[in-house]
Length: 513
Image (tube, rainbow, N blue to C red; front, side, top):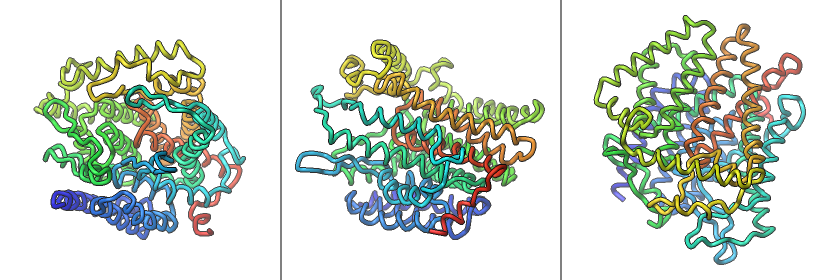
């Protein structure tokens, strides 16, 4: 218990410092009352997570706080992204009918029930960017949901056991798709329908990334995973807990469930800051923000997010810089930083972890992923249209020492489970939003540069996400931010409507409930 209290104090101290120093920035994009309420609830829910030894008792304490926080917040999606990683997403089975399990509960689903469902209901009358109740993005996502409902993907169970399918299971799959995916996209796309609302979501997620960046640096430097006791307490010690190393260095993970997830959050945090900094315009702020997020990203030792953040930076700079002269400045600055880091021992350590640059640390991981991609492609060619729901049983020779088949390519996983039809629906849903956002931002780049920058930021972060999904499973925060970004793209595309049809500000509708 003493160790848990120490970890809690460290987390609260880092969080308190970040809230204090980022407050002037956050108030540029939102109201002081919302900021204070979100900060206080973040402290309260964090403390409950560390101090309550049982997950269901945590649910009992956190649910009213999350529900009231979402109800009182002028922008519930901003509240949602701040609380998304307040505690680790520890899956706890909900018992049903003796030995059966209804489904697993975690912080993500608790937030869905307490924040997203009420928000979706509040904004249910808001129409899509075309003026109709549904858009092409809605239809594509619902089509993907139909495939998820029809096809039961067999879990990788010990002894290669095959679970029986049933009508009840299809109902469960449909319910979980709506809760985990569609309600999230719907709430974001319908509530974020003004420039201020979208920018506030970006700023609040960036705040969460800043907190996690500070925690990441502490974990790696002190070789101490701060949230590990929550996992042990809520699973009664049944969950496997270990410190993941890369070479001789601890890979930070904070409250995200894994180093890749933490790296992704920090990469998107950098991407969001590329837009937010245009409203701050402070060199000193730029330095400490990029330092906190950058060193936090390094502390994850996750190669995919490292490359992802470079791609996001390049894309945003290219899209938002109208001339080559202006484009040269950010690239020159980035090059100087890269050279400076490269001349230090930290730079040599980073290079040693990049196989494509001759690095040898964890090169077996790289080789495994290549073998996995080759096997997946063979199975996809055998069942191209609707996939092979038993594919996991045909890949047993790829089982790792941890006892799992580590499918770390979202696109291969989608094609194996739902075929090229499912993969097309999955990607088409996001690409439609991407194209609409880019077209609108490009069209108004000369008349409203700030609004265009906001759109280009969303485009860069979507493309960065699509790149990083090729190196990670569609789990944890990857699966949540995919739909958040899609919702932001849909909301941004709706901003075209003021030229033909005025859109009521989100605060007016939120207060008239």
